[in-house]
Length: 350
Image 1 (cartoon, rainbow, N blue to C red):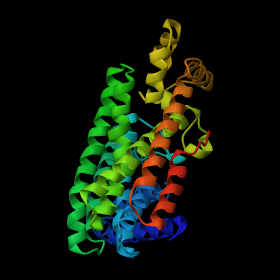
Image 2: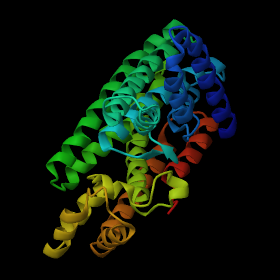
Image 3: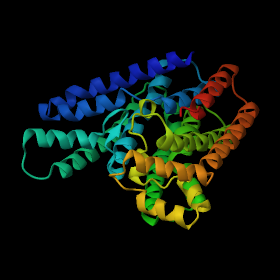
């Protein structure tokens, strides 16, 4: 099965599930239509990486090419939607995938209707509830995928720990921003739990476990998935500062305005002199940061060799992942697909 077909079938399964939920919500009241609209909008974008890794984990462990496996994998997009909605609220992000973030949409709706009370508080509350709804639905979609109960039962513990880990990773991310220590080791710990495990390792484990894989097989997948997940997140961190807004879907330097304490920023603090640290302290996390300020911070990331060091880490992690992929015992078709996904996860788009 080609990557384009996987994506197409994941999309179809995802939209079909939401369409089945639509009349359930609208039977309560048409007032819930904006909630569905915001979710529809968010689900229309994304790379579908998590379902792809889950599906190829399934096929690599000997699972058959069947639509139910793709439906189970597609449920991870609802988990991702939940995480993104909540992440945008916590970060105060204005945009997601080139359009207003969910909380900003609800905030704008409140203002346009001229309702009393605080528009911002309404937007935040509505987005949190939408994220909770998506989190609830991901489990429902997984359980109703049509796979045999034996397969679902084998995958459920991994699905559960995956959801716990990403929430813990989100908290650790907030903790790093609050502390503002700029510690590289702590930043890489956030990378591991907020992204590496959640984006690649656990989806691979989920698919393989549902196909009956042994613990030894899951460990071999970890040797591939964890370094690749780290490389993926570090690449995303670089793009959050240096990426093209047309590719990232967010304004240039938005991660700097949000003050994200990424590994890239931690590397800069580690090597910065007193003057550079002063500039970082003054401008990092300034929501009013203009393009001139963005360029000033970018210059420091280059001058301190933080960008160069981050690129080296990406290369090292990717090399480790390629080596591990060559050693894991999976089907030839899955190996080809995972090789392509490795390239997609770490590609430069700056």
